[in-house]
Amino acid sequence: MKRTLWAVTFFVLGFLALVANPASAGDPKAGDPRDRFEGVYAYDDERPPVHFTMWLSIKGKTIKGRIEEPATFGDGTSDKLYANFTGTMFGNKVSFKKKYDGTGGQSHSVPYRGTLDGKTIFGVWKMNGQSGTWYATSTWK
Image (tube, rainbow, N blue to C red; front, side, top):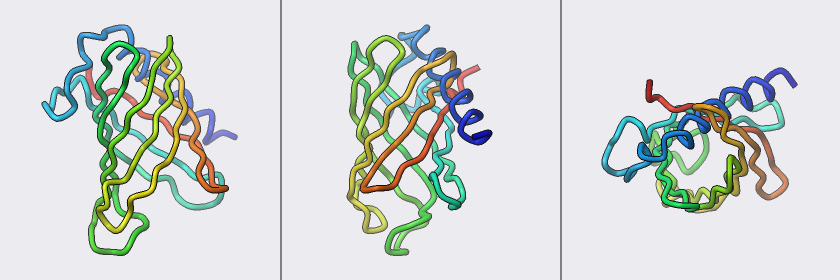
């Protein structure tokens, strides 16, 4: 419970900061530091949490971006895994689907839901009977 509350709080604070300044939501490929978030996703079992970097772009109600994470699963051909995501944002609620790009033999999708609070987004993910929590905080100061 303590891990979930911490993850949610951290995630929401970063996301709200981005919503409060929509001009900061540029093209994730451009490398604008305002688009960069550092985060963690955790499993509901005893597996260790996974740290990731996310580049997020918001245009109207559409969100999209890219995620880079260490290869904690996969076929062992890569040290990192990469995924693209697209989704929607209504108010401070976010919903998106992360799709791995084939690196490390991974090409499956994972649906995410979350809430933006300040500079943090936090929420839950669920896939094929597995689930967990996640958060990401903007690195923009």
